[in-house]
Length: 87
Image (cartoon, rainbow, N blue to C red; front, side, top):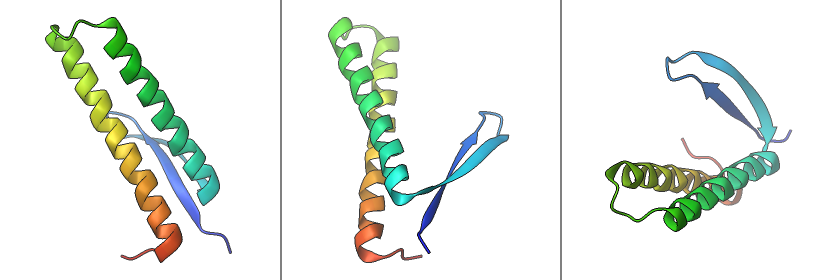
């Protein structure tokens, strides 16, 4: 049986909108797509801002932190694929 991963969408209020189960391959594709979007947004914000606006800097830092989390999930997913899941 293939390992399946669950992806959930939860509202800011904590309500579960839904969840999907996907293969490791599809989960990697989803996370990789998210990483690409965050990377593009970071590059765009860098290109179109002066760096002096505190609000823009806060947005940029939030995008970077979220991208780091996505990249960590991709790293962990690949580690689990090689080593097996450890709880």
